[in-house]
Length: 128
Image (cartoon, rainbow, N blue to C red):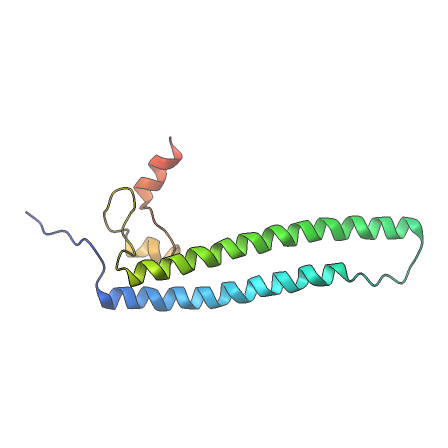
């Protein structure tokens, strides 16, 4: 019987921790940029006071504010997923598929460091 590995070694987990911390730092900076751009959208200093121009400006500001809000929410969710991945590293459960209990391949974790499903489990989830 082949002894299949059930978890990543501490050294491997440390490698993933560094990768996740780098991505987390970048993601948090992007989130802060989005939040500050959201706040700046409110401060509309339009010099032209013609009613038509003002309505067009407000329409454009509303659209970009909604879009920036959605992007900020998505970025915050990504930050939370990365933080949860760090907790799984602490618990030594990182990289274990929550459906199959098998190790998620390193290539997948390098591409999607917050993954909790193997490709097979993800595909079967999508087919349900």
